[in-house]
Length: 406
Image 1 (tube, helix red, strand yellow):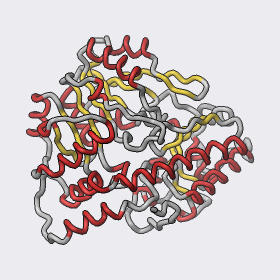
Image 2 (cartoon, one colour; image 1 turned 45 degrees about the vertical axis):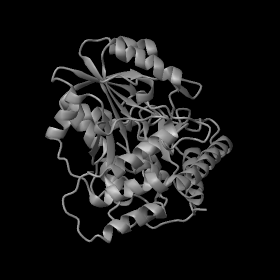
Image 3 (cartoon, rainbow, N blue to C red; image 1 turned 135 degrees about the vertical axis):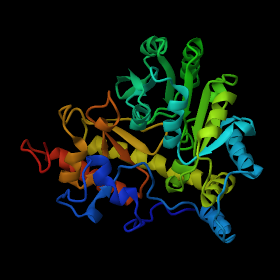
Image 4 (tube, rainbow, N blue to C red; image 1 turned 90 degrees about the vertical axis):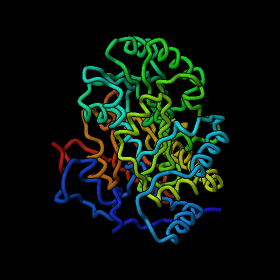
């Protein structure tokens, strides 16, 4: 048994979670003040976990530390590919040739590179909204335009507007789809039927596709992840991105798996990418894939219970909130439109009025006003206190402006 109730102090570790919220959420410096001390905040924002990385992964890192030399390193040995391939085959029934696997120090950096490699200057990136903001940022970084296809939202459930998506996919300059599978922030796990319908539109229009599958290991126990590569086994214009970072709380290790099918695109990547890897990160990731599965299965049980707890708490204390347990991720997506006006800055409200750090719908491109995203990968006691503060702040809010509101 693993202790997911343990509260771990992350202060003074240069953690984004504890030290970076002013710049990331509020675009402010250290002079921004709140009615709460930094250590008094309940942190439910950035997508890493408040749980210790599994011991078997730390042991793998220690074993590499014992080698005592940390020079220039790349994934040369076949053992890493074997471990990751076995993971994908066992959990998803999906395999891929070794030569298609390249490494990146994160999926976000990979997106920044790939958009430039794939899209000509006058071509555009297409994605579904609400969207992880870095899909938009990746387009902007390469000075490419982007196009949004809004998901349908009915009775708290999201679905793809295939008519709108098909129309936009057919536009000549829309050449790259960045797909989030499972979807962030809604937590949707796309079904086989949905993916097959997407695949038909993709193939009909010869779109390039980057399938960001970073959350694929973090499913509710009644869900199944289907890699897009399994639905499109022979489609060459597909790049699949996976990583151990969310799954095993290794985001700071900066290692991701990028599976590039097209030989030409892969050659461009290998020619232009700064192609070295952190030796400790390789050891951590390989140990995670080889030995981390029992820990992950216990984590999923704990997260399922956290999602259930949120539903019960909101039903009793914030009954007008719309909430469905996410099918994947450890991120809850909560509709508070019954309590707030669309233009209100919810992260600012909850920071000042509740001492809770969270991300609002305004951080997810569009089609997301009035929502908050809550990170539930925390001990139950922390979650309970965060929810108590959130509900109390909403239920006692008044009309005058709070400190820091524009």
